[in-house]
Image (cartoon, rainbow, N blue to C red; front, side):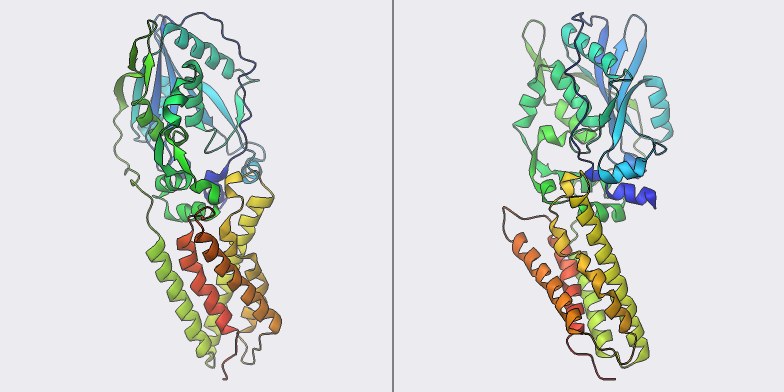
Amino acid sequence: MLRVLAALFCALLLAAPASATDDFVASGEPGDTISVSVVTFEPGSEYWQRFGHNALLLRESTRGVAITYNYGLFDFQQKNFFLNFARGEMVYRVAPNYLANDLAIYNEEQRWAVEQKLNLTPAQRGWLRDYLSWNVQRENRDYRYDYFLSNCSTKVRDALDRALGGSLRTQLESRDSGFDFRREALRLIAPAPLLMVGMDAALGPAADRPISVWQHGFAPLRLMAALRTVTTRDAEGHEQPLVAEESQLLPGGVLPEPPALPPDLRLPFAMIGIALALALLLLARYRGQPAARYAFAVLATLLSLVVGLGGLILAALWVLTAHRYGWRNENLLLLSPLCLLLIPVWLGAAHARWQPSRYDRTLALLIVIGVALAAFLHAIPTLSQANGHWWLLLAPIHVALALSLRKPATP
């Protein structure tokens, strides 16, 4: 269960990055004997592997060693791991490893690996060598994890950008990716449908803003593609591609590729919502039969429990955590915590002489008003959150529950 909860909120770890480079000073010695590459690894089958991985690779020609620098290290056994995860205060780590060791791990998982050797000047390669050596020291290796802004891919991107004097960001930030954070995250997690649905519910409107190719680099495979389009200048000032050559280190190709777009949930959600609403209305109409009464009580109670608990989680993400991409989530109007207050009346519906009170009807009306407000906000482009499918799912259910409280059927 802890693994599922961790995955549900994996797109929402959005605290400000803690690691800084202000204390770093390069030696100024050129990296004549060093080559620099970015190694990108295929997404894996586990939920934390769905987004892929990349690392910086330094090959030392004189010693014949190849060292990878991985920014995506975490440990489930870390003290207060899941508590910090829930609060949005995750600490990740960068660490060096031999390339051969990394390849052995990913080869066992049947994931491909691609190396992009970069056209960097000796001065730029020397800067990266010094920076990475500084970064993996005990006092510098930990950083505040941020899924969209400070993860294994963005840390690689940012280090390269500093080595290139900011030209990487200049070239990529001016280009529109055609995506937003929500669609890219859901696309990558789509092979795990339940986790995708949970992630979608937890993301607020900030995840729906268009992002540049630079921001899109939070996804390792997107960064790999973006690097192919970047140019740089050699020591003499001549323009050249940033990627000098590209080679396949591991074949992989066994796991299915992520879809080009996340699935469209509008039709299936609408069908489920209408089916549940019709079931509630039908059971309420024939509640003179004991079986219908009991079935209505169970279904209404379960729906209110799931919806209400979901609303409490969304409210906690907004009020109690640093998950900024979960703030101001308009799904709170649909996954209303008020549903929990109606559970007693739904349990009472199992009795033949069930009589809902005015308090119960008022609560149900407030929930329906919230549903109407969600539809109104969705119609305003500047406020709109990509949650129309959630409205199609939950609006029929809330309306059906409210209608069942109007006037109990006579046995």
